[in-house]
Amino acid sequence: MNRWKELTGETSGQDYAARFAALARSGKDVHGEARFCAALVPAGARVLDAGCGTGRVMIRLAELGYDCVGVDLDASMLAVARQQAPGLPWFQADLAGFEPGLLGIEADFDLVVAAGNVFPLLAAGTEGAVVGRLAASLRPGGLMVAGFGLDEAHLPVSPGITLPEYDDRCAEAGLTFVDRFATWDADSYEGGGYAVSVHRR
Image 1 (cartoon, rainbow, N blue to C red):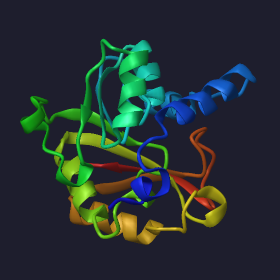
Image 2: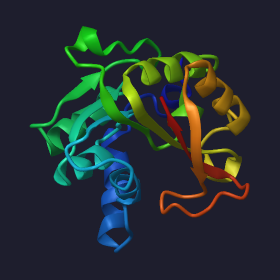
Image 3: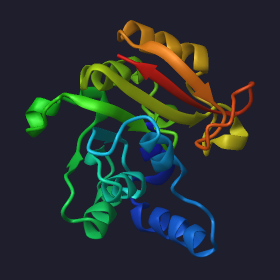
Image 4: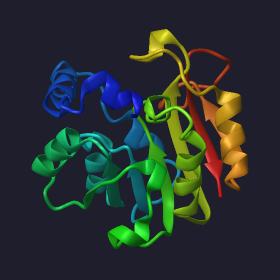
């Protein structure tokens, strides 16, 4: 069982969406991930939102002109995404066994984004499989971006994968390290409990 399901029982979609809606109403910027992605690839690029949740990042990218596909395992989160953007393609799938072709999706994405602590919340031991599946869905030269917490202050569960472990899984999948930041606002990474990593196929 993945750690997200252990944490939420996969019934938290409405609550999750409500929390971000409240943040947006309070004036907080909730589009940092989408802005970061938009700085990496031009509008019109194909983007896979891996672990898309309620669709906050993908919906914003679609508004900015990106060709997006969202994948998540949690039906409660996808229900919210489909309600908010019924015209966008949302798929329920386990990232550890993700095969775009079986879903009728072409595996030539310009960018894969895994925001929202996707990797620390995977089932233990599946991180390499997930990186491999996501890397295989990229076109040559495509980018993978993952942002996740590294300590208890930045995670709802005990820390999972470390940055060296993540980099090793990426290298095993044929990805090359490009850059790393401390936030989705592209602040430089100098250690700390959160990192946004960019790798290239």
